[in-house]
Amino acid sequence: MRLLTHNMLSSNIKGVTNGFPLLIEVEKVIEKPVDFNPDFLKNMFLKVDWKALVDASRSLGYAELPEDTPESSVIDSDDFLRKFHHALLELHLEEGALVCPETERKFPVSKGIPNMLLHEDEV
Image (cartoon, rainbow, N blue to C red; front, side):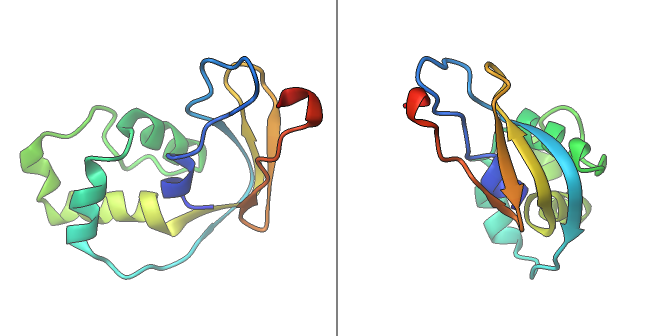
């Protein structure tokens, strides 16, 4: 599961008001190369929750992104875009779990696929 996907997921358990961002429990991380596309990255930058991405990338062992949201002048930097690209698209949570920040319910991730199905009592 890419961190791009993680940045768009939240816990939809009945009664949960704070289901984003999901915490990550890591068992296995892999890197998969993806073609570099600066235009795509610049467009995605505006849609990504920066703090959630930084926290998620650090939980996967990647600490190259700045803690604070970068200034618009930095976004055009090739160095920044390559680090953003790596975190967003090339790091994959292969095995582990996503954890609801409110209920601590764990959603397993197996072979890179998160299982976000809810139990009957959570709907």
